[in-house]
Length: 536
Image 1 (cartoon, rainbow, N blue to C red):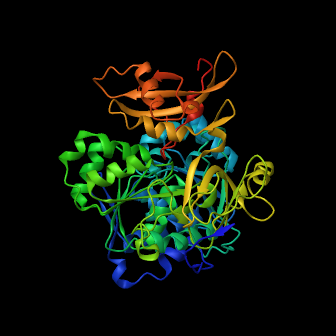
Image 2: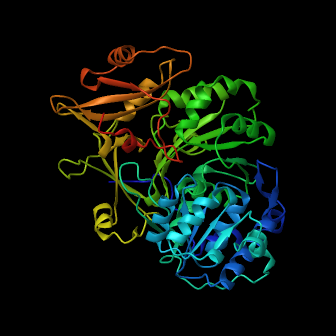
Image 3: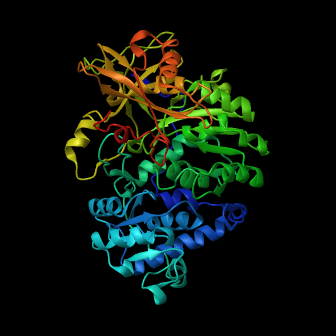
């Protein structure tokens, strides 16, 4: 067992709203909180708080309060930020829905979460309306933030809510027990599950990450990570606002717009997922923009290969950091400090690691075969084991799924992440791969992430994914799905030879399929289940 090397932090016993806004200074009220990259609308902290309170009041007047769940289906915008914090301010629980979901997916989540209201935007109204009807949500409880309003359509809009001028309610609840949000796990290998996170969980994770991420009021932070995902929700909608930074909000990732936004708004701090790092390292368009304001890029949501991270750092002249987390951990459990660790440890963490455990947490590595704890190394790397985490950021449970909860959180409060990891003598953690995704070839374990990182170093490969498939002898073997760089004629045999020359024999790729795009979740995780068709 090993603890975070950082001092424990105080975790206030307050709601998310009170943490972020209760003690805001007069000076900070007039700072810019949000800039919508599309359209350029600016929202000060004063305006944000006023709109959050008004939204909370309007929701309360419509019968929403403690014990209610409200669905929120929208891409990033200042409207999303107001609606999200308005739901929490009203004492309700927000279940944020993937903006790429079909009507069936949306309805499934709304029904499972027992949502009684859905907030969306015009672009997503067709699927939102179908899903709301399926989930038994009345038209007047389907709010379309940028719509034409209740009088014209039967669906209230943001203006209708603000115009009610209803006071924010005095919601009475215990922050340690009351659910703030109900996001759904990404479901990369199976059906998503509702992750029950309290106000204390979210408050704790802001407190745990604040000294390490070191965001400040002087930062302009690019908010392209989806707010509906726990990474964007905690790091941007909560931690960045707590730091009084300015969020430059983008509704989706598109490379030219992403680069242009950094240039135009002089963004200083970028939070990304590995697919964006691939574009920053390889795409020629990057050289057409002035990105000199950018000083730090932090990658999360999926493992970032060290070579890829170094390529981004060198090309953009920035510090690249990595973190690790999961929805069930609110989400950040490990991260490199903004300075890489120089001040506290005298050196930067290697990019192949995800940094150190955050304050107030304890870790274990456990051999999945024997159940025995793996010894902490005096130096060098430990043996690999499943990473277990205990701390105030661990979720309460999976909604309505006591068996999955018991399988994930043990009697001692450790959350079993399902990730295979190692730790070095300096306390830095290295993620090997998902336990369920390891390929078992002739008794050897082959981590797909290692092969994917290697494939990305090939100049003719723009993206790649690796899964285990069964050959004619019933043996599991590594198969690579490869996206070729346009204009190249890379062959399967060339891919196989490239990998074989650089790995141990048991790790060799033995099948290759070329595809147009690697399926990924909105947060950047490879959706391996979509690659596992019967023909593979």
